[in-house]
Image (cartoon, rainbow, N blue to C red):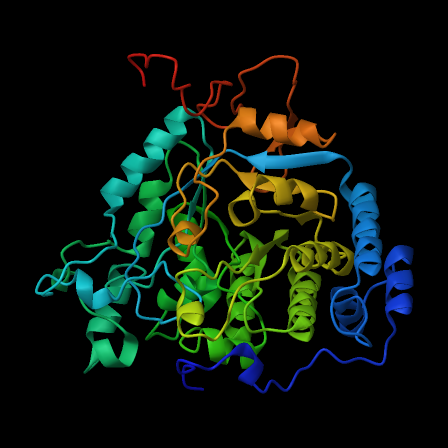
Length: 460
């Protein structure tokens, strides 16, 4: 499908899937309260608070949120987990053309002979290593890396050789050699090796990046992820999922892999021995039926693989994105929709223990409210965040342990530091402070960033 032209709105899109069911809200809610495995129709009823009326009913909404909070308490208790992590996105160069994204920069603007200047960045492996090393010395123990699809990015030297063998590599396989660009991003293997510092957990290589790392070859996703695991990759983020329904993907990201490609990449990552996460990016052109189908596909994937450690709902931030600028959408999800999506995720995904909320997407107040709607994980410290902020997000790029302790205690829950895979946890003794991480290779409880009022030491 061609990209929507300016002036097209979400209401003009004739989707085959519509939020219509033969189920009733009352039956769906009863099944959810009883712990039965929900169907897509059940999820649609809960997400819409009943398809027989327009709008979200406040009382029914509260009933769904309460059921999800009860399920959360039964399954994971009163702990609210978070991780000491750093974001290190390697490059913004990308030609995919997703209409929901303002993180990308056209790859040609990074070329040596480009007439203009790019507003974006590309980091060398050496620069990535320095950034991660500094974070590890401060106490972080996870680096999350999600990047644009730079045409010079290849899996390894062998992949470069394969791509150079095409008659017209730029057109056929979106490849130009590193010499064309001002900065060589290295290979995916080199970047992973660079970020694998002192035992840090490297969380990287989305399905879309894995596709880019095998383009032009007959390599399986499993083989790609095995090579990356050998280089130091520990787990793979299930971003690039957006909505796992192709009629939606054809509108918002027609240049990306399709639903089956995303699922195949995730299965390949798990087959390579990696944990994975899963996401949904909602609140744009999709409807509640699409959201429900997405949840079903995540649950089915978990039934097959058992490799998903957490599910992460990502509310679409619309400002400064092509979907908004072209008039396709007029805004994002409402507060009530955000809470219902988290709640129904908890109720529907009976095989995924952890549901994450996002202070980056929602801000502190609403993120805390979602901890009573089914969520039990509160993201990480981040230290740097570029994707949401470039799309118009307003909620900052760093969260201290002191912030976490104060926020989580304010809603009567227990703050717990955790590893990326949730296998290691430390409940924080909140009698003192200041607080810092203790699970990482250099984590000794020291705050990640010094208080502004405290003069830096020689080690800072």
